[in-house]
Length: 323
Ligand code: NAD
Ligand code: UDP
Image 1: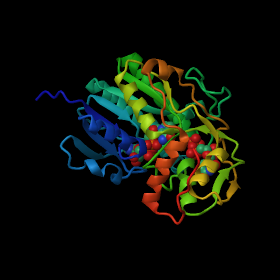
Image 2: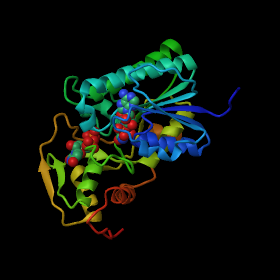
Image 3: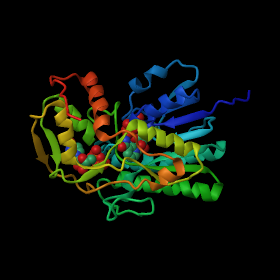
Image 4: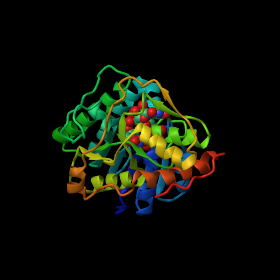
């Protein structure tokens, strides 16, 4: 029977970003197939939808092909934290390449539109600052981050070749560091690390001297940008991130001020190829999608800390931080 409801496939749908996207699509009354191999995703993230008539959950690895009837493919499946993507780097490269290849094959067969969750890591350790989409990047092809960086670069290449050769409808989104509820407490990313360390009353670990910078986008803003990109006419690649740039030391100060200002900051060795600076130029997103972030870091940290406090408990009393 013909069905007028949009049928969405969200790969990596049990992960951090994927599960927030699933929530938005379900709330909009659409059909959602959530596909995940649970490497870094958790059923708990989408448990609220299990049993819902518009929701299906499939345990599957995107490195294997799959046939499904869908209109839109949100291709997010890939570990995002350096600790996780370096855990089995060959698998990460396979997930990026074969996973994207399989999903583009599905998009082509079904005439579906595919959105790729690419990354600011395609810019590597950038020599141009801040980074516009036209910057081609400075990536070490043989380093410990390459499985992910080069994997996402070739995933972008595949998208554009499917568009040129087969007319496949693609959307390519370059996501900058995003944080919020449902990050894994042990996934090693800086926001979750600092919050979890502080809630446990432990020192916060600065890699290097903490002078490297990142730009942190709150998850709700990110998902709004993702949906606008999928619904709009612009193919991308397009940067989605919060242009507010902070040193890692500043981030540590913001977190400990909210949990326990007496906690120590300790320095640890800087991992190889760790980018020194990162900040998106978002003029294209503003112009093409009418999108810009609305949640400042201080505000997003409050809700993320509250969520982690609930998840892991804490011996530390919440602190009043003057506005
Ligand atoms: P995440 O690790 O929480 O989610 C990734 C999901 O993909 C997990 O549920 C995991 O189990 C699943 N997965 C991994 N490999 C798979 C495979 N082979 N087959 C099926 N499922 C698989 O990470 P996230 O932060 O939600 O990131 C989602 C996407 O966004 C990733 O593609 C990531 O590269 C991209 N991205 C995220 C950020 C960020 O700051 N969160 C930044 C840049 C890009
Ligand atoms: N980082 C840190 N302490 C930590 C975890 C990370 O100083 O406990 C640093 C890391 O070296 C990097 C930055 O924080 O410079 C962001 O790291 P993350 O893994 O979150 O993301 P990415 O490096 O992929 O941007």
